[in-house]
Length: 137
Image 1: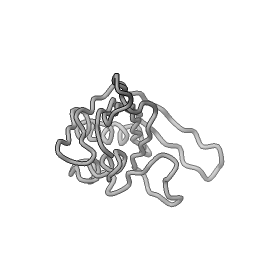
Image 2 (image 1 turned 180 degrees about the vertical axis):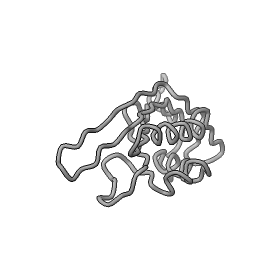
Image 3 (image 1 turned 90 degrees about the horizontal axis):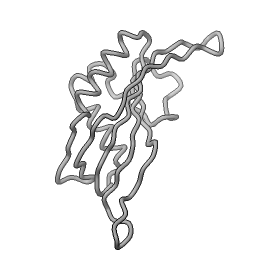
Image 4 (image 1 turned 180 degrees about the horizontal axis):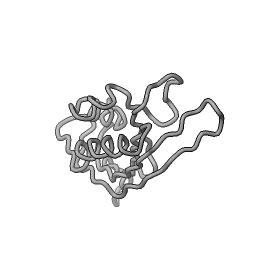
């Protein structure tokens, strides 16, 4: 059984525009290799879970997934965020495991990480939140 995180990664790395920008650098948050080269994309589940019916939990899930587009410059982050948005907003993946019935962007905002240590690099980040409905996975 495939995970929704794996399906999302496959979607992004299989998109020609996104992969041209990041190759295969799409990681779960907290799993970025130490020597990874910018730009990259991270993803993390923010909230959600199984939908409840009168019979209890069922296989349908609705989660909020945050996707972070991280680059050295703000302009690069915007280009990457636009490519990710084109790939994910409206995404459906029927007859697969997991079966994605809807992926819609809820919000998008900018962020900037200032280096804490002298050898760290400042990065620009655009955070996108998606409402993701699926079953399986």
